Each structure stands twice: as C-alpha cells, then as structure tokens.
Amino acid sequence: MPALDVPLPLTATPAAWLAVALADLDAVHQDHLHCERKAAQSALSLMRSYPERSDLVVAVARLAHEETAHVVQVTQLLGKKGKEATMDFGDEYAAALRDLVRRGEPGRLLDRLLVFALIEARSAERLELLAGAIPDEATATLYGGLASAEVRHRDTFLELAAAAAPDTWRERLAVLARAEADIIAAMPIRARIH
Ligand SMILES: [Fe+2]
Ligand SMILES: [Fe+2]
Image 1 (cartoon, rainbow, N blue to C red):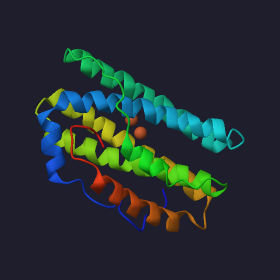
Image 2: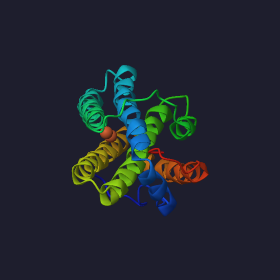
Image 3: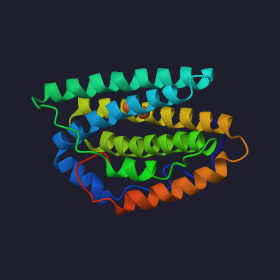
Image 4: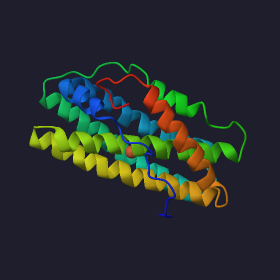
C-alpha cells in the first residue's frame, strides 16, 4: 500500500453516533446486512465495466467473495438473535458520494475506486467502534473481524486507484476525502452504519 497523505476516514465519527447505535443494535445489524450485499455488488459492477483490466478483475472478484461471506455472517448473527432481515431503506450517504464520480474516463474509474475506498474506510472505522463497545463478546469479535477486512478492502481500492492513475490519485483522494467528511457530517445520527 502506498503511504497516505491524509488519514482515512479524514474525520472521526462523533461519540453520539456510537451511543445511538448501541441503543438499537438490531437495527444496525439489519442495515449492515445490506451494506455488505451492496459492497459485493459494487465490486462486481467494476468487473462488468473494466473486464480488460485483469488485475482489477481478480482483486474485485476476491473482494466480492469476502463481502458475500460477510453477508452470510451478518445473516447468521440476525438469526441467532431471532431477528429478521428488513428491506433496504437506501443509503443517501453512498448516493451522495456516487454523485461525485465523474462521467468520462479515465476520471470515472479513478473516482469509483476512491469512493469505494472511502466507504470501506468509514465502514471500518464504525465497525471498529462497535467492536470496542458491544457488550456481547461473540458479536464484538465478529465486528472486529469485519472491521479488519474492511480496512484491507480500503487498501485494495487505494492500490487499484494508484495503479490506474499514478500521477493524480493522491490529489483526487484529498478532494473526495474532504467531501466524504462533509457528507457524513450532514447525515442524521441514527442506528445505521452510515
Ligand atoms: Fe464487508
Ligand atoms: Fe469491504
């Protein structure tokens, strides 16, 4: 992984989010299930757009495989708690980030990779906060493992970004990381991952 000029995520999640999340962990798990599914789908969508980039295809196919394993883990967690999965309520945070992706290539590829890296970074940060605070040990351990995986995924996307645009990815990352911090700060604090 190339060294970063900025911490990712750029800003820390406020303590108020953790308190709200801990007060309704079932809702967090139900939302998290869809985050994992969408992470797998997003990774595979890159494969559809850039089939000629074999390094990218291999990396995102492996990543999607891990995300679907996370779907299984979170589904089993809900089952263990006697909770049913809910519908996907949508994700305004991810939608706002996707709006920043440029339409024309080669900027589009770079932006998609960096946006996915930023979503992984924020998810990892919050999963780690949950891992440190959830009273049930087995659930906390599960969340700690998921947080480590999302940090690796962040770095996978950054490596792909650096390979795709070696001269411009850092500058663009700084812009998008600032935007991510503003978007997350504007979101309501609720019992969801973002
Ligand atoms: Fe995941
Ligand atoms: Fe991930």
